[in-house]
Image (cartoon, rainbow, N blue to C red):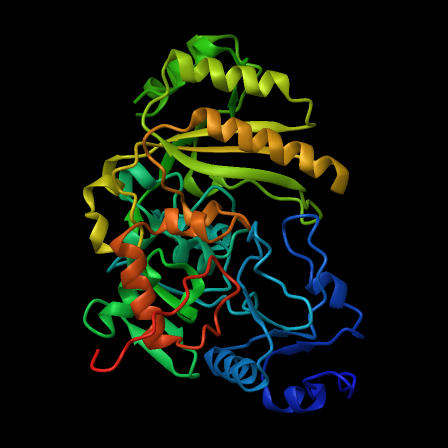
Length: 422
C-alpha cells in the first residue's frame, strides 16, 4: 500500500518491496506493532515504514531513501536507546536485526560481525573458542549501538572498552556509499566511530580483536545496603576477590561461581520493557560521606525499584590516551548510574526530580558523561560526553561525512560548517 497521498512525502511500499532484499513492514502489517516496540517502556512511536535490511546494499538504499524523501531516519541495532532513538514517528526505521552474520578467525583472534547481532549471541559464539570481546552488561544489546558509543562492560579494566578492540568497520555514509574504515583508510571516520555514536553513518560490519577469556568467576551477589558496605564495595582475582564482599554481611543472594564467560549474560524476557529514568556520571571517589549520601537517597525513595550502580573504571581503559578515540573520559575513575522505575506519566516527574537531586548530591570534580547511557537530556549533556577539542573534531568530521545532518536521531553532534578556504 501507499501512504496517504495528502502526506508531504509518500513512500511506495510496493516499490520498496521490489527494490529491497530485506523485509518491509508497513503500518497495516500484522507484526507492525511488534516491530516498532523497543526495549525501553513508555516509547510509543509510529514510523511510516520499518525496513529490516538484509545486507549493506539494502542499508545504502534506505539511507538514500531517507535523503531523497527528507523523512527522519532512525537506525536500530538492538533497540536499547534510552532516549528512544531506535524508533521515530512518521519516519523510516532502518532495523539491522536481521544482519547477524559472524565470521570468527580463532587462530588470528579476530572476528567480522554484522551490527544487528546481539552482544549475547556474539559472546556465545566466541565463547565456543574460549575467546571474547568485551561489550556491556546486557546480552540483548546490539553490537552496533554499544560499539559506536564506546562500550563499557565487564572486561573494561582487563581489556579496555569495546572500541579498544575495534580493528576496522564498514560504514554507509549519508551519500549512500559503503566505506571500509580502519587506521589507514578513512582514519578520521574510524576515529569518530570509536565513541562518537551514530552521527557519521550506519555501521554494517565491525572487525574485532578477540581475547582468551574462558572460565570466569561472576554472577549476582546481593548484600544489605548500608553506608559502610557501600563504602567498602569499591575494592580491587576469582574467588579471592569475591571473599571480602561476602564478608561484608550475610548475603541476601549469592550466585557467584566459576562459569564460562558467556553465562555472564543470563536469558532475558523479551516482554520486559521497563519504564525508568536515570542519570549517568563520573565521580572520583566513594568515601564514607558519599556512601552515606547514596544510602540516604535510596532509603528516601519509594519507587518500586531504585538503584545506584557504582562501576570502578581504570585499568586497560585508562592506558589509552584520550585523543586516540572519540571516547574522551579515559581518566575517569568511577562511573555512577542512578535510576528509578516509574509507574505511569504522573509518576515520572517525581522520579525525574529524585534522580536529578541524587545526581546533583553526588557530583564531584568530573563533569563528564558516558554517551552510551545518556537519555534525552539536551545538547549541554552531549557536550559533557564530548568535551573541548573532542567536540570540535567530531563536528568537523560530521561536516565532511554528513553535512546535512541526515543522521540526527542520536546524541547529536551538528556538522561544523567550513568557511571559504578551509
